Length: 405
Image 1 (cartoon, one colour):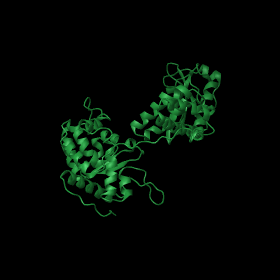
Image 2: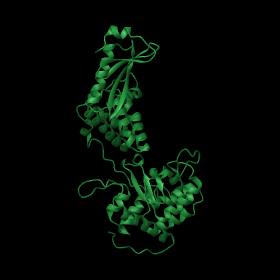
Image 3: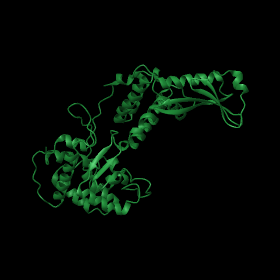
Image 4: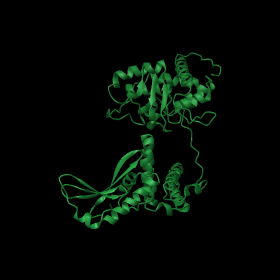
């Protein structure tokens, strides 16, 4: 039976908490001390959850029912009411429920769990710095393309054209989320395609000439800085993962007996787990490193605190110390080095290489390869690659092989 104002007003506390149901999952929780709290019980994602709707008498029965109905509307659109509440709190209580900032924070909270920590932090930082101060308080359904373009032009005017393009993409994702959850009619960011000058991203510097690669590898082996950084420099060409994936590597991800490094999806750019087969050379370096940092979490802990990985500039800074400027070689350049030589010199199949680079490779039927696809071939490729690099360091003339199949 539904509650009445009189029944709510006269409810008394007992020895234990009392729940007075009003229907639709809402109830009044009366504590032993006489406190009265509105609660909504609901299920989301197969789990039972509870949403706090406020306290009585600050929130009347009628107001609590309005809150309940709004929450159930969110559920009907596949949105967790607790995520909405969290987003509203982060945006500030004075913000409108359907403002761009509230919905953007809700979108970020919902999807960032599947992103790498760095991508998650960069995305919310861009929103907080360039978007929320301009359109954050505006109802998302009222924002039109000219208003969005004006904001992007401001970013472009300070010389940050790449940032403007990235923010247009982020805003488009927020608008599409708002459309999917019933709070906007369309994604106006799509109307801005071609409205910004094109941005051509320059390639990160990389050494791909085998003779120069040999010099680099020998220079790395003679590096006189810290041992973890030296190991990172030695492993970077063997793994050719992204710099962030390397520096945040954790010992629990490695199985040296199986010769595998399993990187979880939340640390990968594409959000999918990635498997790196370990060559004999990589295992030897890892065993040496384990003697120094194996008791901790990270392979390459920060110099200041073992609770954090080394800085994102550690490898690049080491390259600079060895005489390689930013226009010659970068930590990211080891990926281009491997991609070029594995293809043009060792002549491995491009799909093997792209899969090992953790790019979005698909099979002939359009399905994404899983992390173990072509694993036997990739193991052989990684060992051949390590042997080839050893040969370069030793000064051997490595004869190009026939294309691997």
